[in-house]
Amino acid sequence: MLQPVHLTLYGVALEAGKRLWLPLIQHDSASDQSVFIDPLWVQLNQLQALQEVPRRQECLESLEPVVIAGETVEHHCTTYYPLFDDFREDSGGVVEVLSEKPLSADSLQTIEHMLSVYRNMFGMLDYSECDALTGLLNRKSFDDALFRVMPTEAAPTPAAPLLERRDQSKSAYWMGMVDVDHFKQVNDVHGHSIGDEVLLLVGRTLRTSLRSLDRVFRFGGEEFVILIRCSDESGALHVMEQLRQKMETTPFPRVGRVTISIGMTAVRFNDSPTSVSERADLAVYYAKQNGRNQVRNFDELERQGLLQIEEKVGGIELF
Image (cartoon, rainbow, N blue to C red; front, top):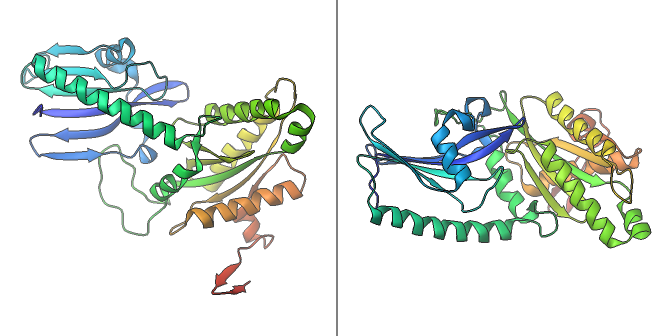
């Protein structure tokens, strides 16, 4: 409808305390092509910091449109529009429209109407995909995230400049099943309202301890799941261990010290939500049976012959 020269939808990512511009959709009118960028595979070191594009940052933080006329080589006009009408630290966004001339009042009104529809739909999706207590992603949204991060055996092909090829030798995803130790005792001694406060703080600690592009889910009860991207197994294990230590040293009001057990596993080619969850669940069960407050890697336990998956064929289990 606007017939722009170029249009980009930017989100915001947090990495090591820095706020970065995260391109999500790019459309070029000359080629009539749109590129959709999956945040789960973006190379963060190639993203611009917010302050590197001050007028776009102004739009994001003021929540007001910003128009810049004739500053490009082709003397095009750039219009920035805030994606949301409220401030969001790690999920804000800006629509950047490059046009041959300043947008008309009708065009600006069209953008505002479309963004109003987008905000309403985003709110409904956010509500359906998030856990009511903690605000984390819920189990329903886990399946989609898993299939998006699953490694592929197909040969990698060139993608958008900011996309990382899904080459497992360079980068892969790991799943961590996080279980709060002795949570039943917390409820029995302090009551369910304090138990809910513990879950809220556990969820917040997991979320703030990871990168904004990693994923944290609440599966229900005291069970949480994380999906993280690391270049190797030792790096993933290090992240999980840091989470365990962070939780152990975080003070919990009325309760004091709370610890977690974590079972991790690599996301493998052709995995399913059931298969990867089963491996992580076995690892966290092993951790709880062997002292709690520890990280156990299913893949390492499998190599040592301490754990194995039962392969089911029909009604017969093959060990």
